[in-house]
Length: 158
Image (cartoon, rainbow, N blue to C red; front, top):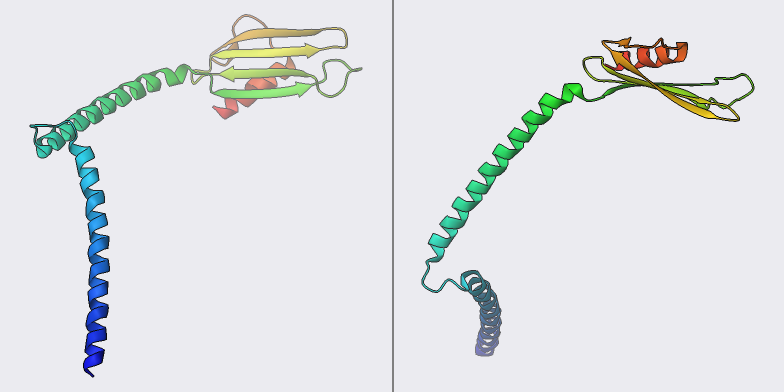
């Protein structure tokens, strides 16, 4: 019976020794991290340093927040003038050419101002035309049927 107490005591002693060694290595790693943290501080208090870092971080957050809000308001002011509403029609401009190689694209902003671009493809040449749109109407030139269809598509996307 006494022999079992000796074995149990020796086992507990070895287990304790192993746990002490493991704690020693863990403590050494924490000490190394702490020394890296306070390296170069000399007479400064770590707590004061952390407080100054937190204050600096708050200033940076505030500056970023102000900058983001300023940029967002600028973008919101410019957004209505961006060409956001589009419509496209492809077609055959000439009977002897297939594959719908000609096109009309309308691009409008929120005020229904923009442009219509038309590309006419033939076997010998290709032509591209642009027409200005003001308040959903052509500014100076008549629109073709396909251009009107592209403009209608862009207006329905608005």
